[in-house]
Length: 301
Ligand SMILES: Cc1cc2nc3c(=O)[nH]c(=O)nc-3n(C[C@H](O)[C@H](O)[C@H](O)COP(=O)(O)O)c2cc1C
Ligand code: SF4
Image 1 (cartoon, rainbow, N blue to C red):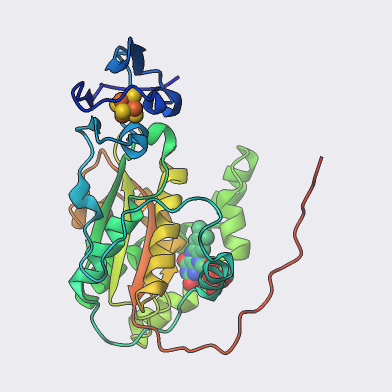
Image 2: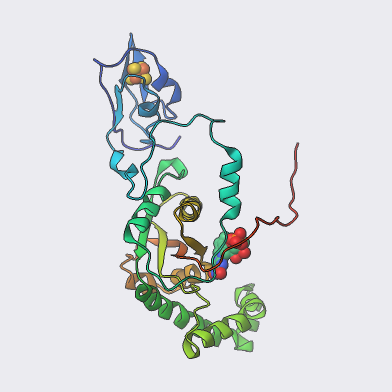
């Protein structure tokens, strides 16, 4: 099992010997020695399950920072919520009421809200609790416009390549179909979006968002994309709860992954990957209803 440096500390004076920390530890870091828990393993996820379960406050994981759960726009009730004790209908109503916003007001997003969204993001699970994600906050419309220039420039160049029939054919013959697919599925729409951006100052890329959070990953993360999208979903849901609209912008991620100059211009170092882009702002739309979803495949065996 994966695991890293051990940050677990047990206060022997406080320990009552209940063994709960041993039972919840996923890496066997803690054992019982007589009637006391002791750290015996040399690997740990630093997940904090021991500290969360300990009835006497004897277990601590020093790598975990309690301040990461301080929020500026609401106060968190830190008592653990047992399964079944949250209103499922309220939760699903929030999930289904979140919609991708494609029409933001020209209003800035309070910096404290952006801070809170990042703090909510990191409550997500991550592979082996690695928490290798990074968050780059674009806090103004100007920052988005500057980033957008880079993204639009990337697509202008990509369109130029995709329009070359011989290049598409060559790549097809080499078994590389991405440019062909792009040509058929996206070229015309992207061309229109570029013309809107450049000639009509209409923002079909970020939909007029006035803030954004770019989710990245530090080098050598095991599941960077999965971790980033779990964090992203936290941001999307809490943005809705905090009165903001949000939209994932895959087009920006693609451009930032392929043209390092764009993330570099945001201070994202070359060692980091870009995994997700959440545009944020105050939504113009109001909806009347939660609507259904497409038919899906579900199997039960
Ligand atoms: C990986 C991913 C990338 C996306 N990229 C974009 C994008 O570039 N622009 C956009 O307007 N919406 C984007 N979306 C939003 C989807 O179009 C949207 O989630 C979908 O239409 C369902 O609508 P809803 O989010 O309102 O439920 C993206 C969503 C995902 C999951
Ligand atoms: S959960 Fe706390 S009290 Fe119980 S054995 Fe572990 S450290 Fe001791």
